[in-house]
Image 1 (cartoon, rainbow, N blue to C red):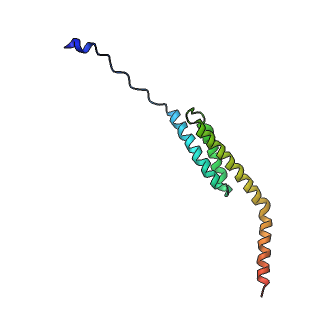
Image 2 (image 1 turned 180 degrees about the vertical axis):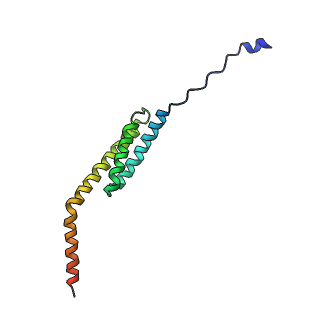
Image 3 (image 1 turned 90 degrees about the vertical axis):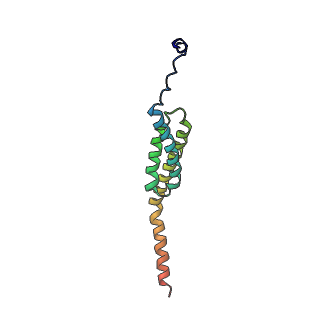
Length: 116
């Protein structure tokens, strides 16, 4: 009976676990894409859109180290950068055109008050 079991090869070793770095990079790439999409919605409020875009760009850069999730990371990085640029343009437009628009509204208010 002992001879029967001696011919059986030992079981193969268990597969090596995936390194934690690739999982973190995968999560960063996906988070970058999600935050990049949110940034495209939030650029109208620069106080929300610009920080979200910066976070998404950093996560996209860090996520590009994963070869399998590189495309997601690049898409998230691109969307985040576009969102930051749109948020900055909106902030600049608000500073430049804000006083002009404020004057228009005050003139309209004055003209409505003078009507009997």
